[in-house]
Length: 205
Image (cartoon, rainbow, N blue to C red; front, side, top):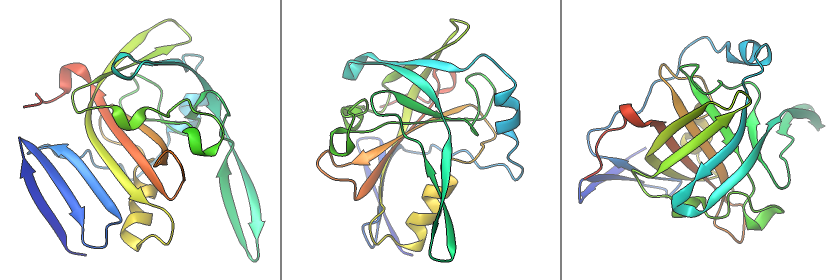
């Protein structure tokens, strides 16, 4: 698929030719690569240091985080996995990394269109904004936003479907991935916000 690249004010805007993926990233910032062997889930279950609170002062976000599992349902001859999304809390994907574990910490939350609204203001996050995760052990990890992606989920392209699969996979470095529906009045797209630990974050022009 052909992608159009635009560099505006030090930001790289990537527009998919079919409109399925819109990315905003700092120029010259590589996206962390996924590892080949995801084994985070078993390690996370053995630990009590789970994320319990997410804070983003720039959008007045201060919400509890709960562990989130999934259900498997059958549709015709296919089995579909669906996350048990909490209504009024952010949900930490139990098969993703823990804060400080050096891989991909994945947290999802509703916006106003699908019940709860814990992530209703997520689209207002700007590159460079700080996000903090507090754990059961009262440890705080600070991340800084480095990328925002809007992905079509209704009648999506193969590229968009693959991205939605890849974005929850383990990464080779510490990363926080936040997911919600977009825009606020429907759920035809997903908003993906990616942040990395603040000391590692590239400067935002």
